[in-house]
Length: 300
Image (tube, rainbow, N blue to C red; front, side, top):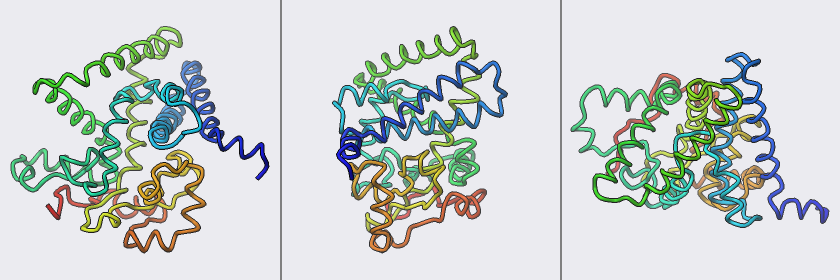
């Protein structure tokens, strides 16, 4: 590799390219919203917001070629509206404690519930959680359930007298207010349309990546999947669909993951008990309307 190429990678050039392309496309989409039909705004906006979630995830683990303050500033804008980046960074670190991976109440990103909690639930709530384990359900109601859990968790924290998250929420509200001012006041894109056409489907597409990236298993190495998808989804998720690599080497830059996966595929799939899918098409064929697993954690 040339010295120029080495410098480009040392300062995370590929990640900067993603950031510049992403924010430029988002600006153009919002600026020209009046001349774009909804059926263009929705898929493009959803892709850009899910891509932004992936960029935020990358900034938590990698993107180390720049100072921490600049890394934070690049991904801070709340394009997806729903969650302060600082709190996402904090909760995601808990998720990476592999000994607790998938354990409800400990793993902050688990889609399982404890047997005792399941026994106390009514039929409607059980049905919602079961539907959420299908791909169609995850895309349709997954964001609403995620937001409900978020609101419940954060309000419960305040009721217990823990106000540590309130400053983050205060900053987030101000940032979202400024974002809405630009979207609606400057670009004349009604904020509620942005929520319905961009933010909600963007979160939905972001949740697709997490649809079956983890499963309950006695051996922690067998809990993390690989989805060998095409370039469109690979770039969208910054190759985090090859999730087994990410949990093995969480600080590896996104653009190094595919090469590492190809070179070590046999060993990686042996370690995770062949927990692998040939893309999201295969997942849809299997689990579009069939639960990928029961919401009840099987080993607790």
